[in-house]
Amino acid sequence: MSIDHQQAFDGTGAIRTGHGFDIAALDAWLAANVAGYAGPLSVAQFNGGQSNPTYRLDTPGAHYVLRRKPPGPILPGAHAIEREHRVISALHAADFPVARPYALCEDDRVIGTPFYVMAFVPGRIFWNSTMPGLDPAERAAHFDAMNATIARLHTLDVDALGLSSYGKPGNYFERQLARWSRQYREDADAGRNEHLDRLIDWLGANVPSGDEATLVHGDLRGDNFMFDPAEPRVAAVLDWELSTLGHPIGDFTYHLMMYRLPPDVLGGFAGADLAALGIPSESDYIAAYCRRTGRDHIDALDFYLAFNMFRFAAILHGVKGRLIRGNAASATAQSLVETLPKLARIGWEQTGGR
Image (cartoon, rainbow, N blue to C red):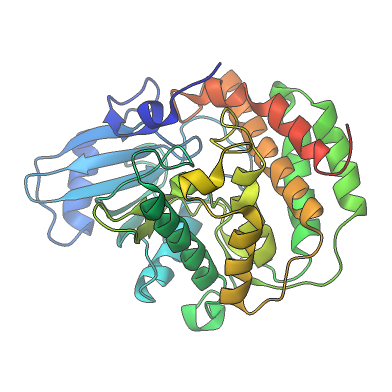
């Protein structure tokens, strides 16, 4: 089933069934923990997002965003709200484009799960990777802004950020494969997929030599970039749930998947007339990132793309499991889950498999 991602994911709506909480309790907590907060408070739920439910909080004088762990049973180690708060706090202090964090609540007695509150950043999210509504020159400038933001992230000094303990540097791909393979196999509710089973084996046998460790976002899809409403500038990078210390090329090539995926799978643009749209070619986009990060080129591109397609398919597999268990975070979860078989197949095709 094809969906209009901009229409489906943009904006807010009523709080979905099973995602409600005691608004009066939240209001009292905000008054005690967020400087300058003053109610009355109204709450709506953002339509986008598949993992941690996200809410808009409005008062007469200010707007905030709340992210929480999903209600109901979750896999161990998943939905790390506390880590999200830690990383955006460090990045905000370094003037990297993220929302200003206000407070973290680890007490699940307030609204039922841990959560944190941050500033509401006004701006524009493009849920379609081709960025409809822009002319070619504007589109090119927005793509360049994304590229520059990713390159800056990957050149930040993690020690200066206070994030040297944020992850385990080294063996990133082996650790990621172990993590997502385990979560995939342990989620019995969601079943198995033959292409994912094959990818696990192939990826494990083809990890490139060499290693690097920087701060990585972990989910650099185009819709996790909030752009300034009036200019091609990234106002905030969103959704840091999967961030860690890891391999920057793995992070960048996750972003690069949009070049290899069709429009009905995560909003890719494979087969589009990039020159007419003003979107840089895949090779030019890679070259710009390499220039900004001091690299000559990227080897083993087939491995990195196959790895990232496996990884996102494993994430969608988790969404499928949560959907079956009744605690998926988004009303559009079913539509995304329906793309999982195609994504897994395209991931396998990156290896030369058919």
